Image 1: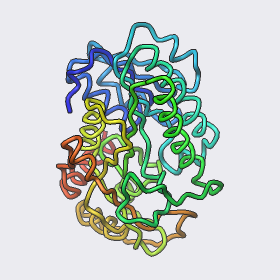
Image 2: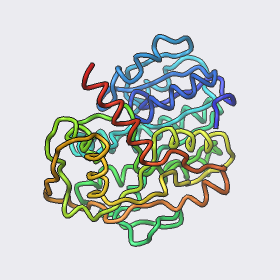
Image 3: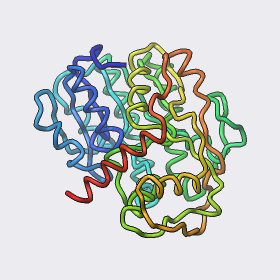
Image 4: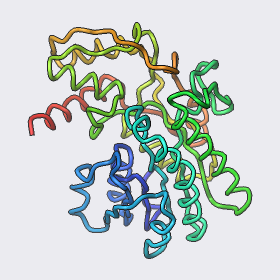
Length: 320
């Protein structure tokens, strides 16, 4: 699960939430890291500390621009393609850019990996399962996705990226793998990105009502970002092609999550129910048997500990 196997890594979307944690972990393990990000949803602040360290380089560019990836000097032995708006607020605001990241961006990353003889890991998502009719979701499940719904730009972008990665491997022999990432949370999430954990924490710290969609009975399975990074790098270090689910095994309702965050923050906030978004998944929990058996991976940070760490980071960021 370490980065000692790689001398030089390219992380597209490296200034994003998960991407910046991947950059840091690879740098800690001794790899040179090039972080490519157009900052449409990522933040230079996420990699500010990394930029002060030797072996790290930030490049502001769009992964969907072929010249951007072709023009990077040197050779990479690892490419992590994480460039894509990932929260509902972002991909609803940037629908065409989201589709570009999954299509042209993925193609460009694959071509660069092929040219360099690098290992590539595509960041896919639990959203490829849509509003699942199978529970928990196994990698063999084909999903229940609305191809023209409001979330389709993200869901179909990732489904196409998976098909493209598979075809590229079959046609060109590209060393490529697919990871399906479930709900991940932790430090460096944006309060305004629309996802439950940062939204609830920000509301609780401000003493505002926590806005729970619908009746809050829909479930999510939370995975702390350090565990997600472990899983991604374990897949990168393996010979597996995937898809492989990486996510938490502890299923919790959105209403219970809101109540726990109120409790952990010591907030006096109340719960306010709001309209549930269209195509919002009812139940979401990964079957991670494949990751456990093939990668020796399982999450180690429980949601209680992970939420405490995340709340601590948000409290410090607000005070700073």
